[in-house]
Length: 142
Figure (cartoon, rainbow, N blue to C red):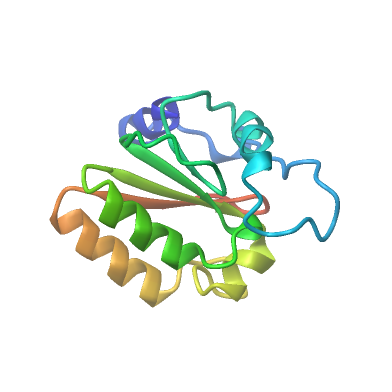
Protein backbone atom coordinates (compact mmCIF):
# COMPACT_ATOMS: atom_id res chain seq x y z
CA UNK A 1 0.00 0.00 0.00
CA UNK A 2 3.04 2.25 -0.07
CA UNK A 3 2.12 3.32 -3.61
CA UNK A 4 -0.80 5.49 -2.43
CA UNK A 5 1.38 7.11 0.24
CA UNK A 6 4.15 7.89 -2.26
CA UNK A 7 1.55 9.30 -4.68
CA UNK A 8 0.15 11.59 -1.96
CA UNK A 9 3.62 12.85 -1.00
CA UNK A 10 4.55 13.51 -4.63
CA UNK A 11 1.28 15.32 -5.33
CA UNK A 12 0.23 12.76 -7.95
CA UNK A 13 -2.56 11.09 -5.95
CA UNK A 14 -6.07 11.44 -7.37
CA UNK A 15 -8.64 10.82 -4.63
CA UNK A 16 -11.40 10.32 -7.22
CA UNK A 17 -9.51 7.42 -8.81
CA UNK A 18 -9.11 5.67 -5.46
CA UNK A 19 -12.02 3.30 -5.05
CA UNK A 20 -12.37 1.33 -1.84
CA UNK A 21 -15.33 -1.01 -1.72
CA UNK A 22 -16.66 -2.62 1.45
CA UNK A 23 -16.15 -6.38 1.65
CA UNK A 24 -19.02 -8.60 0.59
CA UNK A 25 -19.79 -10.00 4.03
CA UNK A 26 -23.33 -10.55 5.30
CA UNK A 27 -24.90 -7.70 7.24
CA UNK A 28 -24.41 -8.24 10.96
CA UNK A 29 -21.36 -10.50 10.59
CA UNK A 30 -19.98 -11.16 14.10
CA UNK A 31 -17.20 -8.89 15.29
CA UNK A 32 -13.67 -10.09 16.02
CA UNK A 33 -13.93 -13.09 13.66
CA UNK A 34 -10.33 -13.92 12.64
CA UNK A 35 -11.55 -16.05 9.71
CA UNK A 36 -12.46 -12.99 7.62
CA UNK A 37 -9.06 -11.29 7.62
CA UNK A 38 -8.13 -12.74 4.22
CA UNK A 39 -11.23 -11.33 2.57
CA UNK A 40 -10.78 -7.95 4.26
CA UNK A 41 -7.18 -7.63 3.12
CA UNK A 42 -7.85 -8.95 -0.40
CA UNK A 43 -10.46 -6.22 -0.71
CA UNK A 44 -7.69 -3.66 -0.14
CA UNK A 45 -5.28 -5.33 -2.54
CA UNK A 46 -2.84 -5.99 0.29
CA UNK A 47 -1.14 -9.35 0.57
CA UNK A 48 0.95 -10.60 3.46
CA UNK A 49 3.46 -8.66 5.47
CA UNK A 50 0.98 -6.63 7.54
CA UNK A 51 -0.84 -7.10 10.83
CA UNK A 52 -4.63 -7.23 10.57
CA UNK A 53 -7.50 -6.83 13.03
CA UNK A 54 -9.55 -8.96 13.15
CA UNK A 55 -7.07 -11.69 12.45
CA UNK A 56 -5.13 -14.56 13.87
CA UNK A 57 -1.80 -13.64 15.41
CA UNK A 58 1.17 -15.13 13.63
CA UNK A 59 3.51 -13.75 16.25
CA UNK A 60 5.16 -11.55 13.61
CA UNK A 61 5.27 -7.78 13.76
CA UNK A 62 5.11 -5.68 10.61
CA UNK A 63 5.49 -2.00 9.72
CA UNK A 64 1.78 -1.65 8.94
CA UNK A 65 -1.32 -2.71 10.88
CA UNK A 66 -4.81 -2.58 9.36
CA UNK A 67 -7.75 -2.30 11.74
CA UNK A 68 -11.13 -2.95 10.14
CA UNK A 69 -13.37 -0.79 12.32
CA UNK A 70 -16.67 -2.40 11.27
CA UNK A 71 -15.44 -5.88 12.23
CA UNK A 72 -13.76 -5.38 15.62
CA UNK A 73 -15.43 -4.59 18.93
CA UNK A 74 -12.77 -2.10 20.11
CA UNK A 75 -10.69 -0.49 17.34
CA UNK A 76 -8.87 1.89 19.70
CA UNK A 77 -8.01 -1.11 21.90
CA UNK A 78 -6.69 -2.94 18.82
CA UNK A 79 -4.36 0.00 18.15
CA UNK A 80 -3.15 -0.01 21.76
CA UNK A 81 -2.58 -3.78 21.66
CA UNK A 82 -0.67 -3.48 18.36
CA UNK A 83 1.60 -0.74 19.65
CA UNK A 84 2.20 -2.60 22.94
CA UNK A 85 3.02 -5.94 21.33
CA UNK A 86 4.74 -4.56 18.21
CA UNK A 87 6.39 -1.24 19.13
CA UNK A 88 8.17 -1.08 15.76
CA UNK A 89 4.87 -0.71 13.87
CA UNK A 90 5.19 2.49 11.85
CA UNK A 91 1.67 2.95 10.51
CA UNK A 92 -1.83 2.15 11.77
CA UNK A 93 -4.50 2.16 9.06
CA UNK A 94 -8.14 2.23 10.11
CA UNK A 95 -10.57 1.02 7.45
CA UNK A 96 -14.33 1.30 7.73
CA UNK A 97 -17.75 2.58 6.86
CA UNK A 98 -18.71 6.16 7.56
CA UNK A 99 -21.08 4.93 10.30
CA UNK A 100 -18.46 2.83 12.12
CA UNK A 101 -15.80 5.54 11.85
CA UNK A 102 -18.26 8.01 13.39
CA UNK A 103 -19.49 5.54 16.03
CA UNK A 104 -15.94 4.93 17.29
CA UNK A 105 -15.07 8.66 17.18
CA UNK A 106 -12.60 8.65 14.29
CA UNK A 107 -14.69 11.02 12.18
CA UNK A 108 -17.50 13.52 12.55
CA UNK A 109 -20.94 13.03 10.99
CA UNK A 110 -19.61 14.83 7.92
CA UNK A 111 -16.71 12.41 7.53
CA UNK A 112 -13.98 14.73 8.85
CA UNK A 113 -11.32 13.51 11.27
CA UNK A 114 -12.13 14.25 14.92
CA UNK A 115 -9.91 16.25 17.23
CA UNK A 116 -9.31 13.11 19.31
CA UNK A 117 -8.01 11.24 16.26
CA UNK A 118 -5.85 14.19 15.16
CA UNK A 119 -4.38 14.50 18.68
CA UNK A 120 -3.46 10.80 18.83
CA UNK A 121 -2.04 10.96 15.29
CA UNK A 122 0.04 14.00 16.25
CA UNK A 123 1.46 12.14 19.25
CA UNK A 124 2.41 9.20 17.04
CA UNK A 125 4.00 11.48 14.45
CA UNK A 126 6.23 12.96 17.14
CA UNK A 127 7.83 9.51 17.49
CA UNK A 128 7.93 8.86 13.72
CA UNK A 129 4.72 6.83 13.38
CA UNK A 130 1.49 7.59 11.52
CA UNK A 131 -2.24 6.85 11.47
CA UNK A 132 -4.48 6.96 8.41
CA UNK A 133 -8.21 6.43 7.88
CA UNK A 134 -9.66 4.72 4.80
CA UNK A 135 -13.38 5.37 4.56
CA UNK A 136 -15.50 3.32 2.17
CA UNK A 137 -17.52 6.48 1.52
CA UNK A 138 -14.99 9.33 1.77
CA UNK A 139 -11.77 7.69 0.57
CA UNK A 140 -8.46 8.33 2.30
CA UNK A 141 -8.55 10.82 5.16
CA UNK A 142 -5.11 12.08 6.12
